[in-house]
Image: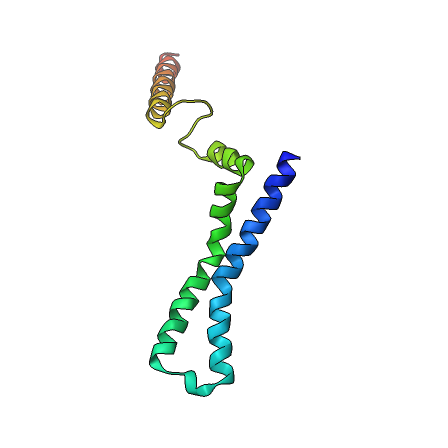
Length: 118
């Protein structure tokens, strides 16, 4: 039930944002199409701003999913390469990775020395 309500909320939010981002350009475009006298420099500037505003619709869904759904947020944090599950900070995780790399390079050097001696 909780997941269904989250999905419903996300869908409603995405539809609302989509309408807010796309309808203004449609209104300006329709106005210019039906009444050619509205093709002034001022209206063209507004039309270009609405076109840029409409372009935000292409990437807004990513942010809406991350912000409105805890399941998406958890999965997003899980796939980021510099985060680790739990309450570890990024610097602690980076220090762990550096230590692992140093240990691996020491092992490789030891193995290559052993191979040369044989």
